[in-house]
Image 1: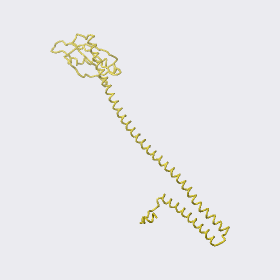
Image 2: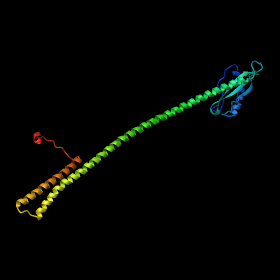
Image 3: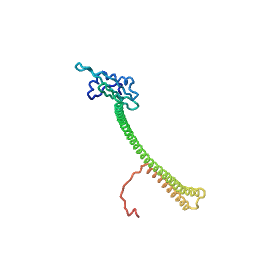
Image 4: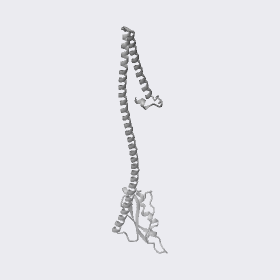
Amino acid sequence: ARRGELALAATRGKTSEAANGAGLARSLEPFRKNGRRHKGPVTVEEVLAGPSAAGSPSPSFVVLSVPILVADGDLWGVFQAAVAGPRRFTPGESSVLETIAGLVGSGLIRIETAERSATLRAKLERKSGRIVELYRKLRDVRTDLESKNGSLAQALSDLRQLETMKDAFVSSISHEMRTPLTIIRSYLDLLLNYRPDTREKEEEFLKIVENETLKLINQIDKILHLTEIRGNDVRLHLDIHSVEEIVR
């Protein structure tokens, strides 16, 4: 019935050969006319003429057809029973057959529901697996970001510390260079505007200017040396020295 047609699936009993005749198709006409969905339960009762045997009068059969309905009243098939005529099915027998058909339909519904549940469960498991995989990837990304964030924070802290050290260094160097420059300027002013009385005094002033100039040159050399260190331009020169001389 789910393919849009009804076909005999199986028979059992003494009347099976007779009920398998052309008359069986006529008992299914009400179900065919109503299409895949048959409003029911509806019991169709029809007296069929059986085949003749050795010239004897053909026996008659009563066929009872009960629809097997599944979800939403969908017609899955037809349950049929036949007895030798002219006896007909009693209401109790009809009720039993309808109950059997109902149980078959309920079983089919449970099977179909179980199959759908299994399919949905498989889909959910696949989606759950993908969700777990995505969660792991996001967790790894978050861990990586946290690690990089920690590295950036440490780098920022180091930069701020270097900036503080640089400011302190510039302030110290400025003070160290200002002192000899001030002394040099003062003694040059004395030499130019207030010439010493003796040659010895003049040489003393010039010697002071020379020493302060050497100090200034030494400070400039230190700055240049520091620049070489930061630029990785320093080359080590290994040599042998006396420890006693170094300590002394």
